[in-house]
Image (tube, rainbow, N blue to C red; front, side, top):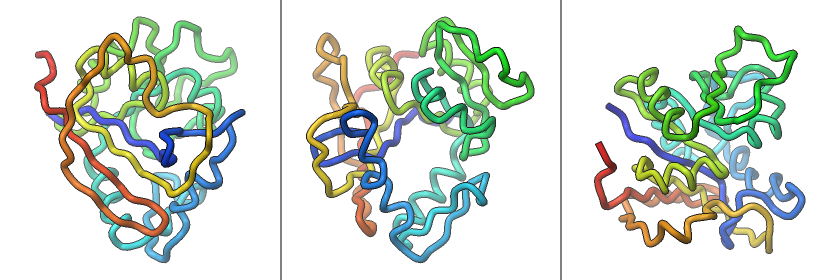
Length: 203
């Protein structure tokens, strides 16, 4: 069975977006800062162009990912990725609200109304031996609180946003949570930092 992880582009001061949903041009500049092409499942919409080191990191993510769990805010912010997530894998949307009335039932999105734990369980069933990606956003904190997150992957960008949406929030009652550094990858305009949880997740 694969691991459960989160991955996000994050500023030096810990934000995944700036005030008023700003700063994405800076947070994701590394995605097109190099010359090595890494297509997504929808290459016309998104093909990374990075250093070779970052390309290897992205290819490993693509090859091992089996399903994703996201929150409703992320789904709405991206307009449901126009019905197709760039990863090309099944996506489980945690939401107490029903999907939009015009949302096609044939899309690879499943709305889960009974919490992150159930969404991750369903994603793991679909993913099999492959990994499950969670978040970013509030779903990450929920997964951490439930002891279900095995790995943090932070794509650290050399910019200070000064405010906005933090990568990790709402963990006061849960912290401290121990992680150990597993790998550091230097790219162009980004440092990929991989941390693994030091405690086993509940069975």
